[in-house]
Length: 427
Image (cartoon, rainbow, N blue to C red):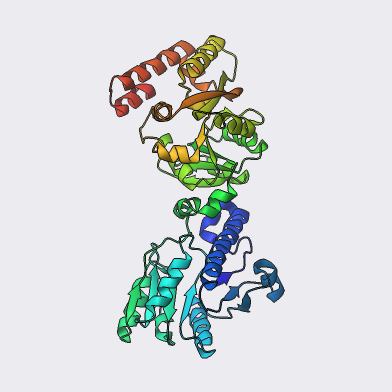
């Protein structure tokens, strides 16, 4: 049971995060995954496969989308239950001993789940594959059961419960498969990111992850520079902005997610949804150098390198700027301790291996770098990222530099991060 991949008409709950075009592309990718698993199952078993399409302009459009091998027909009118019931009854009327109906948006579905569903129908009247959102990703029948499709709140969180109640009302035996997760809302993007299909699509690509909170002034320039190098994707994770941050991010056609405020939480959220091979964590007021994607690939390809960052420069003219830049770059190169302002980058699997950013209110970048250094070197790429000098200008360059060092020292001496964050904010 598939929807034709028309932008704006599929994965509508993901459009605020992905935009219409990306949501439709994800829908296509999910369907490709499902068809690959169905084909793998069908190659080993005597089953017929039919795609029932909703929303296609005509059969030719459906055929152009799915290819010439599969049987294709229209779903017809009615709600989802009526359309599934009609499809199941048609297959059974054509002589099928059992019928299994699935959608196309469950990336965890495999040929093995389909095999389990048909095997279960050897001793049960109905088999259901529960989904984590309260629905189901699969229903299998060995006889028409129209009651199971009537009076169901399709698309709601009670679909599975209502279907089981309907089954009890007609005394049919139901068994359930493993619970899987569909991809319907932004929280589900992490499930897609873990699939082989998503990893293959992102191979060699950079996912730029930008935590943001009320960054409408800085974000346009940051996004423009990030998009110039043609990254695999740019993900803005908003922490609850009250300004135009989200609007600006969407206007630049980035992926826009939401998370509780806090850079560590926001960056971890973005990393979970990212599908690029390389992750670049970028502050919302930092401008990337030209060709940064190539620098990332070359730096992380070096033997023994666990992570990297760019050279450091400050925007604006103020007393002490050059000295701050020199000391920061010395610290980053000689001690392998870059700041988050420098755009920290790492391979996706290494980020997962070290457990991501510890969810601290401050010093999350320092803690990540220390984790990376246990696995290898942290190298500074031969290119410079330019970060806003607003903090140094607001507080004064020497006071800001001293405060940074006090916070680092306090962290190393075991001062609670919440107290350090209060010091840093001047509380």
